[in-house]
Length: 248
Ligand SMILES: [Mg+2]
Ligand SMILES: [Zn+2]
Image (tube, rainbow, N blue to C red; front, side, top):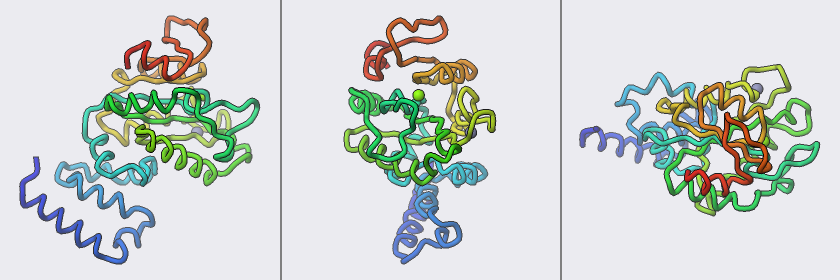
């Protein structure tokens, strides 16, 4: 796709950037330097993706702790996407409370194993989570970022890769992103232009997840008690069971 000289130019540019004590772009726009390098490495400029990059940057969804080459792969390859709700799917839900600090975050049994299996099968794993506790002042956006950084780190150690996390920090009826609304999913589609909802899977533990997935045309799987059957979605009692039962 790219000629040899273009690769060489990118390589030289990258080396030049890495040899600087600071990134020129990082000075202009803090914390963007790795993404700029990613852009160079991916050759996205050559592919005409340049107009897309600002929204990609602004969304802040791609995490610096994913390896850059993996991000490129996920961004450019045609992977099937699995959208994952967080509370009640990945970690234990707290009764009448939010996960406000890492010490309140508890992985559900089998989740690391399930996400490792999905990672090895090259699914693109995206977390989409309502976090109304921020609007209610129970925690800050920084608290949430800290929790997510640790969650991603611990999963990575188990061989599981979450490629992006979208969260809605708003209160009810204040935005178009709080599930069952579809704003977070539409943002993901802007960030991953190949993403097709009809070929994606949504796994959640509440009706609002299922409603969002139905509106988008995803295949929906509810994590819940065995008797919660509905024609509009499949059911499993855990993420691991969903992976094996539905041969994801
Ligand atoms: Mg949930
Ligand atoms: Zn929102």
